[in-house]
Length: 112
Image 1 (spheres, helix red, strand yellow):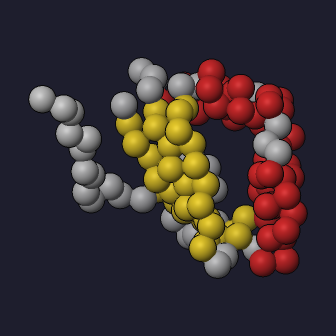
Image 2: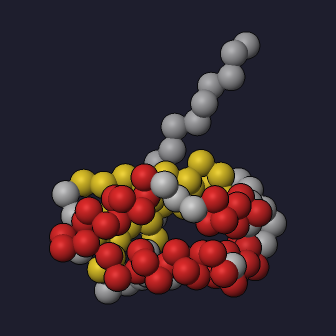
């Protein structure tokens, strides 16, 4: 399993639109993410900074990301959400979003 954390800025003038869209994410978008082996996808907000976290459970990350990008529902979703976002100068593997480096992880202790 691969853990991925990313960040992007939220354009203040599009804040309510972006939040409204995410109150009811389209089922087709969620289906494309699941089909691409994405699990536990969460987006957090602090002021005008978005932070996302997801877990990838597949074997070919690049191919699975490409399948999401090729999905028609996701393409239409991005037409609405992309104008709400302001990328950092160093966008990463997730397109507009910038990857964050994992520096520490507390693993779950299993009962004896």
